[in-house]
Each structure stands twice: as structure tokens, then as C-alpha cells.
Length: 287
Image 1 (cartoon, rainbow, N blue to C red):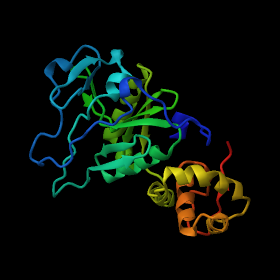
Image 2 (tube, rainbow, N blue to C red; image 1 turned 135 degrees about the horizontal axis):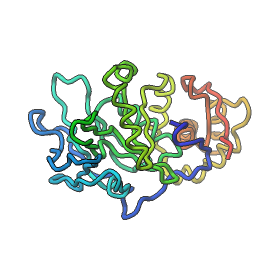
Image 3 (spheres, rainbow, N blue to C red; image 1 turned 120 degrees about the vertical axis):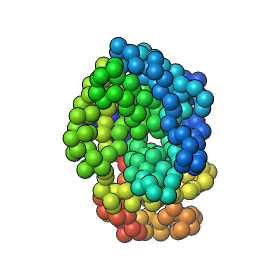
Image 4 (tube, rainbow, N blue to C red; image 1 turned 30 degrees about the horizontal axis):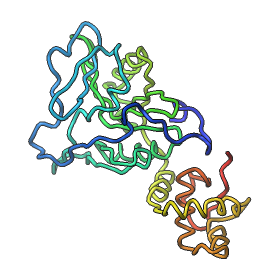
């Protein structure tokens, strides 16, 4: 993902605001009866001589435009192109997860997609995320016909990145190998980057799940984060740093929670490819 978004540092601005409040996540439907309609109906006039884009400005209608008129503000303010319903026999499990970047909930079609959202939420260059944001409709007879990407991200520089989440096996299939370059080339024509994401190391994921769950009052972060960065040094473990903060007046268990939060927000850093424990080495991130 860094290849597409670029390198980041702890000083990277974490938020870029889209016009008209589109940084506020929209409501999604989760858990409608599985026998009901779950996808927005694509109107017949969406099939044109050129690729078209279909978005849902509300839960009751869709809008069709030429893809060449791609409008990031419209896409970012649209509702998902599907409802996220679970049924007994399905293998994927739709979920709605809280994202710090969005300060709200974003839906994912599977637990595998949720893992990607966790990574995107952690990346300091991601400023906006939305699921199932639009559908591309190609001219009649053209492959792949239609495609609804899993997510759209917007970087802190304002660059949109469309993402599809696949397993390694699915991405290697002939079906997807034929679709992927067409989708990438079509989006490139309107200045939108494209990424197919497959997986990340299990320990990296476990660390992200650990760090994102940390809850620290903002007043405590403001007061004790500077002390934590000052007390963190070469070869200092999380346990040692928490003990130093405890001596300074911040209780040990609270300090351990603060360390996890500062790792999530890139104020501190650790080896993400090793499972985080109290013995893990933590350092102040370079700014």
C-alpha cells in the first residue's frame, strides 16, 4: 500500500477534509433479511458507448454518469452500492468496524476486508475510506461488464485509490487475471490509482488489533505522551518505559495502555513483525 500512497513519517498530517463534510461516514445497512435485495439495481441506461459510473446518493436511487466525469466529492458522499447482509450458509461474514480515521463505522463484505480496513486505518497517509463506493459499467459486449470495487481510499494529498481485496488464490485465478488490468487501465484514464490487496503477516495483524483497541483519555495523551517519548530510549522495552512513567506519576497499567495508543498513532514505534509484548523494544518515532 505504501507503494501507491508513498512513504510516511510520524509528522504526516493524519487528516485531509473533503468538501461539504464528506469526511463524515454515512450510515450503512447491516443484517437485512438475506432473501431481500442486497445490491443497488443498475439501470439499463448505464450501458453506454463509454464506461459509466453508478453511485447511490441515498438509499432509494442511483445516479449514472460517464466515468470521464468522475467526481471524488460525489463518490465520497455516496452510500454503498450494496447492503451488508449475513446468511447462514455464506462463507464471507459482512461486518461493520469502527475506524479512527473516519471517527465512525465503515462496512466490509468479509472478515478479510476488515483486516485491510485495519491496515488502512493505521496508515498515516490514509485520510478517508468508504466501502462498495460505486459501480463501473463498461459498454455492451466489453469485459468485465460491471465491477463494484471493495473500497475507495483518499490519501492526505487528496489522491483517490480504489482497492479490491482478494485472497492469493482468487487473485491468481484466470477470471481475476483477465479483469484486473482492465479495471486498472480504466481507472487510470480518470486519474484514480488502483490496488489489489491480498494479505499481511499474522503477527503484524495481531499487533494492529492490539494497538487499535487501546483507549486513552485525550487529556492523558496530551499530558503524558511527551513524557513517554522523552523517556523512551535505545533498547528500552515497553515494560521499562511503563515503569519509568509510573515513577513519574502515571500508573503502570495506564502507561501500558498509553504505549499501545502511541504505537497506533505513530508517536512510538516497534518491530511490527514481532508479536508485541511488555518485553518489546519501543522507541520514539522520528519526525
